Image (cartoon, rainbow, N blue to C red):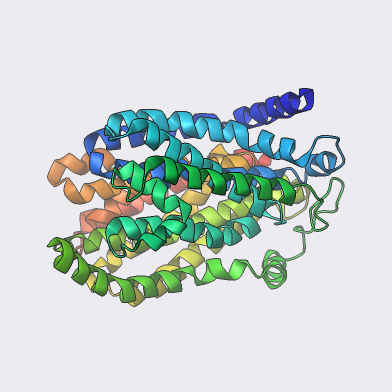
Amino acid sequence: MSAAVALLATQWRVQWRLGIPAVIAGLAVPWTVLAATVPAVAPYLLFVEVAAGGVFIAGVLVVMDRPTGVAAALAVSPARPAVVGAARLAPLWLVTVVAAVPVLLAARVQYPLAGLGAVALTALLLLALGVGVAARRRTVMGFMTVVPWPLAPLMAVPLVVAAGLVSHPAWYVVPTTGALALLRGEAQHPVWLLLGYLTLWAGAAVAWAARAGSGTDPAAVRPGARPTAVVSSFPRADLRNIARDAVVWPIAASPLLLGLVLRLGVPPLTGWAERTHGVDATAYLPVLALLAIVLHVPVIAGMVGALVVLDDHDDRALAAIRVSPLGVGRYLAYRLVQVTVVAAAGLAVAAPLSGQVPAAAWFACVLAVPLAPTFTLAVLAVARSRAQGIAAVKALGVVYYAPLAVWWLPGVAGWPFAFLPGFWIVRAWDGPPLGVLFGGVVCAAGWLLLLHRAALRRLSG
């Protein structure tokens, strides 16, 4: 018992020092406001943003234990794997459940206690999944590119069922289908049965995560290991890393896959919405293209760039770069050029392939390219570790996507968002006047200069 309490207290202090509870609680504020304003979206916010919001944070915390030697110490400690796993999960799980309460109250969910139970059990299942996958990965990027595969069916199937695309009771075999149905107040089975089934899955996931974290990782970076990122050429080092770590390829292919999904998926979905619900979804297609292509592709590129830098920082490779002739400035400049090129190439592939980005919207795509380096710099300006980086990605994502509201705010009503680059991107969708292009360039340049100074100061310290 004393070992469990000590481990739990340590994990809480670590997460508190990294600011993770503050980020989760802070994100609960906009979700609560949105749930109160548009109650229909509340079940999906609770399912996607609240219950699943800590998966990546939980995994990164596990990966962080390796270079610090914590994982090796835990592996030979007398604490049982179940105790270690519970200590890792409990603080983040508790904060997630607490953050769900105001959203549930604001949404006026039909069965609040059942809804809270669904959120709590779903969060426990998904957090354990993240911990279990991370225990088998060497790097943050390795974890980030593997965990979506087991996570996808747990998230996608309930959303497909909720949309009415499929309706057979067999889909309730996926335990999270019942969780979302409870939040929507449209469950096809008794509440006790759905929660009991979800409890079995959550318990199995926790047990699996405990076993996964009980061994040592021979590929892990250990204290005192020689940094391998400092080489004569950054590009050669990256090419070696890509050749060694095949999980990088899904990230590189994501714009192509995203473009194909929109091209092949939008026509049947719009037809289905018209036939089934009498909804003309074509009016929302520009917003979908802005969200999924024009904003998302550069933000993802920027996120990957920031996490790569934080990987190098936590593995102490950046410390070697700091005292080398290359310097942090050149290293950061290389990373920023890299994410900018990746974002531009991704948009050049995904935009025409999707079939949802008209020729006039290419001005918006050009203005969107600088989102990648600004997102990288924004994360680096506020994060000192990989775990803080993941938390910052979640918080900054709200800021970067918030200007989509300008689509529904005509005239001066949207100008409060003008200090954000996304405002000018949305305004440029229909072929902008020269003033919009000029404003977008000035806004992006201003943020790049400001954030570059802050990020460079933090990385150099």
